[in-house]
Image (cartoon, rainbow, N blue to C red):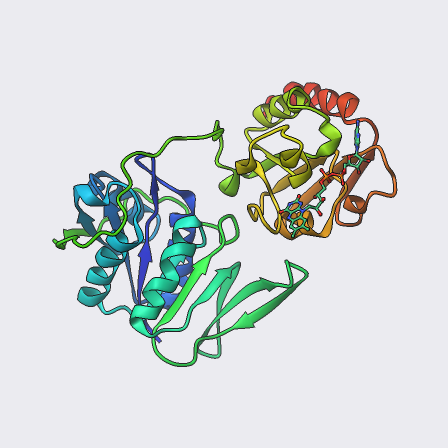
Length: 323
Ligand code: FAD
């Protein structure tokens, strides 16, 4: 059954986040040969429309307004609802990001629609759109369908592979004008905090440190390894609580949920709350002095040793590979 799917592109610092392209790939599957309409919301976003088309959108609808420069639930929900009212999609896909997590329930409530959040895969089975999502902190997966009304889901970053970029694709880019009003919150400025380099939630490689790193300076070898691998640095709550690093790096049940291709856990014991945020990583390497550490139960490769010896050795070897 051909469907019209609306995919929200997500912009940060004037660039489209990768999850936008992954959401387009999900949209393509759901459309079953129908139409994928991308939405872009912001201040000057038209220049990004082509990229949405190259990655699978058939058309792009833009809502531009200076009041939409930064995300606000009121402003974005007015813009999104205007696109939905004019496009009348059969399905809607957002990224499962801070923005998507905040906005999607608000939109679902306005539409009186069901919402499947944090999907890691989507497929068509017997004509139904079936989403897979983790439950019990990633220990099990459930398959879900929406049986009635609009299909609405958020997709977890780094799980659904984007389509290959195809610069020969073309499509219409249209603007709709929306009067953005009654904003109850206005974001004046966004100040970046400790967000150097690669975005943690979209990183393909994460080098994470725990209390075993012992100090803020102890994170330096981890930063070097992450930089050689083109990855990001993450942390356990133990390391954040000990003030070795900023809470924005925390991974786990009360931190970020990540699914990189490679997760290197250094001096992290593997508490259940930490595993909740990283156990679905594709390959897990654990470095720990304690051979009994729980992290080895989820690791694909384990190195029993002192991280201050092992991490610099890995960095030197990866440098030789010139990744
Ligand atoms: P530790 O458990 O102290 O482990 C340190 C490890 O480092 C040890 O295994 C030790 O063998 C090893 N080590 C020490 N020195 C070295 C060395 N030189 N080389 C190699 N290894 C070394 N935790 C999270 O991470 N994320 C969360 O989101 C989170 N949410 C929570 C929510 C709740 C409600 C609660 C109650 C707890 C939560 N926690 C969370 C905390 C969690 O229970 C653990 O306390 C925490 O993950 C422990 O951090 P850690 O592994 O860095 O420290």
